[in-house]
Length: 99
Image 1: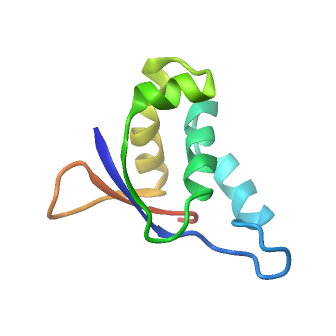
Image 2: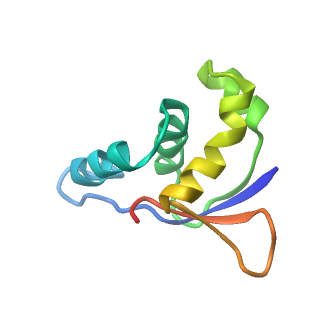
Image 3: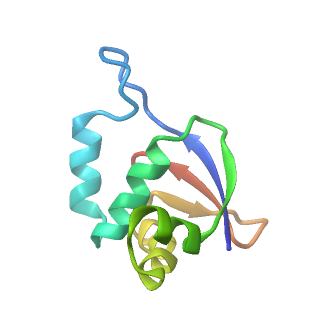
């Protein structure tokens, strides 16, 4: 189980959306796999400073994806640079909406 902290979600001041189309497009190009991208969108909907324990089984049930894909979503976002593992605490990750 990963503990995730939302570090920075860029808010577009013009239309109050949580992420600009440019950042969303970049993420779509950088993230491998549709489930990992769904997880990215899910994280973008969270407010800055929000913390939670990621439960892949709950995510898979809520979003209609396989358990295996939900488990690998953290690794894929980490490899793409959107989740950064804490140096001091294993399985703690900081999320940013851009790399």
